[in-house]
Image: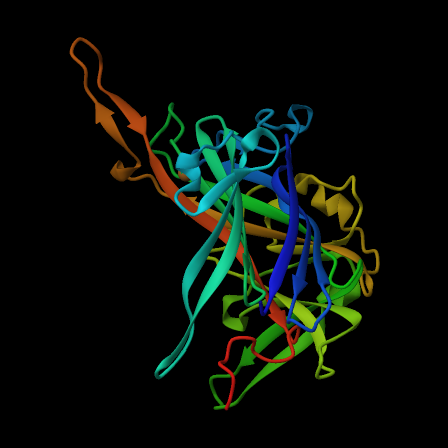
Length: 342
Ligand SMILES: [Cu+2]
């Protein structure tokens, strides 16, 4: 054993599948480090091109939510050959898989592994696969996949699947500090700068992803160092094809940071939650908007013709993924994957 994960999870109506704690052991001689408390989707917001509908799939109906959606029970067909169905109501799959080549140098190679926990939220005609992969190199992959079938009334209308995450990072305990890492390049010069700044001057608030700056967050704990004495942190990194903006005022920024309050769950209220409280060395929550633009295709289903009946379109929308990664930064003392030097 070089590294290990210990992860707990739960699922609920209005919450989908969410992580309740995650601990990482960065080496055989190192203690377990807490990384996450509760982390999962805050909202799944799906507006359509013509303006209607604009579904909130996780909100309570009294707050404009579309329904009381829970996880769909899973079977061995979901789990495949490497997976197990686990948890309450048999709704979660645990898979331990190879993820392909993680490192290669000439004749040497290391194939990485990960443990994935996933479940499926049944949201009317859509299904949302909520997936968390804990990798042997300390990476965590948060993914939401939109699948099942397009809206039966308008199967050919474009729409946006906005999966908005609420991540209570508790690296080495609750008190953390969030910085923004910016890559700043001037094309009139051959050099560049990579700078680290406090998130929003260490106050609750929001920023935008800037693809030219490779916008990345860095979450640190004041006293956490690795065996070499380097300050340890986790990077929060996007994996976007685009950044969604919508009419709703809360859908005009990409990342928010607030103080942790257990009752602050719904993303449509984020502007009220983010009321300028200090966030340096506090129990913080990171909110990330991750989006898939779904332009309908004929491949999203098939036309079924039966004698004596009008032709109808039966949907089968192939999964579109959105999400982000968390990557360790000076958590481990060295690479755990090189072969022993002789
Ligand atoms: Cu879609």
